[in-house]
Length: 619
Image (tube, helix red, strand yellow):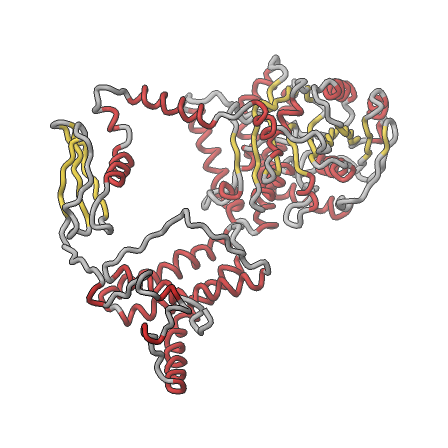
């Protein structure tokens, strides 16, 4: 640091030490804490300077070590191509968490560093000409009384001839170990840089493993570590005293008991403190009987928390919802006359006061312990969304059975978690956020709605709009894109009342198919994510062709008629999204922090508009 190369001297010294045959040790337990740059502009400068230092070191080494020229060329080319150019190209295809301007800053440093070493040499020559060569202080120049660390009694000086040097044999030492005998250190391989160890049990060879030998000897612990890592469960299979299954179960039992926490610790780790305010939003559209059942199951929750319940009436002109809400004095009624589930949900989010905001539908029934299970993962600060399982309340009609065969709203009985790493793990395919749950059973950390990269739901998506669905999956997308975590908790389940008639199911699947295209188009148009376009142009056609093929072969009982219905919905998705945007432009968006609410039978009018798609809430 402090030179035109902005670093690289430490890397060059490390290389010289290793090249001369000495040992360099990385000790992870010797920890220091570094305060990183807190200013973004300074971070960008630091990244540029780091690249300048690396490339200056490589350019110097190209000339200083001709034998290693190809190795340094590979470092230079690989750093530019694989670390930067490919990441830059990916950033144009879909969003990544590493900002593009930092990639460009690193690239700038790479190309600047190509010339900095020669400039540094010129500067050093000028300094030498002006001040002379820098001479190393001898022992006579240093007062050992003033600087006791230089005393020979503490660190005796070594001449170059006294520094131990070991001639390295370019060959590989070959040794054999029998696992029936106690393992011993390999001390007779000092002149070799590598050792090939053949491992056997009696007369049966398990295989071989190559061990680097920088320490001029293989210790017993190192030998055991390498053999165990290489052969794993094979070591148990050849030993008649053990079985792999027995050892596996014993290991799991030991680990479980070792890391088992007490009930008190479990409560502290898995339960959200009671002081955290919770709000719950129910969006409804003229379904008073379903709403009443839902509210009854809510007030029966086994929880000591103060729960704020908000019902959003998405069709206040009908007058059907206020009488039901009046039966529950502590329930807040909010009116949102602009039809659309995203409008209704957003109106509830804006009116809520909780740090955790739960969304559900009026046609679900909630078990008594549902609330606590759903919000428990929020004890972790990185979790922004929790979704739960959605089970069918009944499967009596063909329509209800067909919807479950389609996929339903549940996402299985195994807990899972996704985050920013998962978001970036699909380089060629759209991010399948539709597999993460639905807002019929979801909870959100309220701070995401004011987050500059997340915000409220996109009103152009979702039931009640021409686009059909997609408001929840796009919100999931934005949260994961920002690097936060989403947890699916299957034990926090609700019972959902599916549509009972086939015409209703057909409308629902048609809207889902439109919404899938609308969602992927939105990720492309709003976020520059080309994976969404690839999903529409390639992914969907191949998916439908595959399902038709499976149906014709008799491998699936999903009707061809429903596949065709989905395909027509996909084709209508682009036009439907355009119509939705026109409607939002006409009626306006809901701004965070705008709105009022009234308890009991009161209401808030929050806009005008007419329902276009006839679907009031997502099922």
